[in-house]
Image (cartoon, rainbow, N blue to C red; front, side):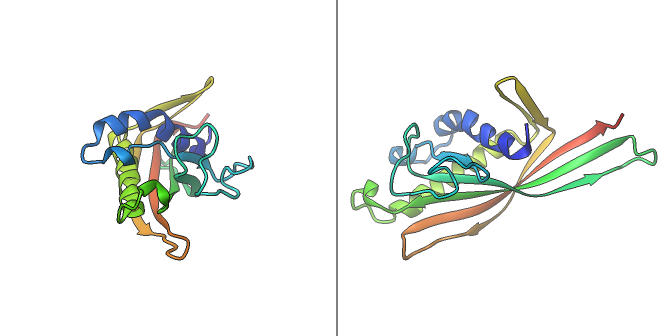
Length: 176
């Protein structure tokens, strides 16, 4: 399992638990977004995505797109018999301020905040590592770190967004 798939599945598999565990999120914002790998070529799944329409099989039109920024490999011993791997992943969290708010002021802004809090909860809760299994394939990282967050809004289209960085680390991988 690659690193982006790991993050996508980590979020999907832990989202329901995060909704029930994070306090202070209004019931209207306790939704599961569409979480996709940016490399997905399925129609309306990351290549082009219409935030105004909920995708069949998803619970909301909100979107989290996951992609890998870089990888770093270090060899911490003189013998080069083990390696440490560090992966930087970016999550683009997007939502639209539309009629779902029923005239509520700042619906999109509040929805974005709720989605970010849920992502933060999952990453911080699994910071000491988590094994994720998809079908018969599984992967484990030793450390997950939530990094910086920046705004990524489009006021003309009423789209609110954050770019959030997450660092994944594996330590002491034996090299044959």
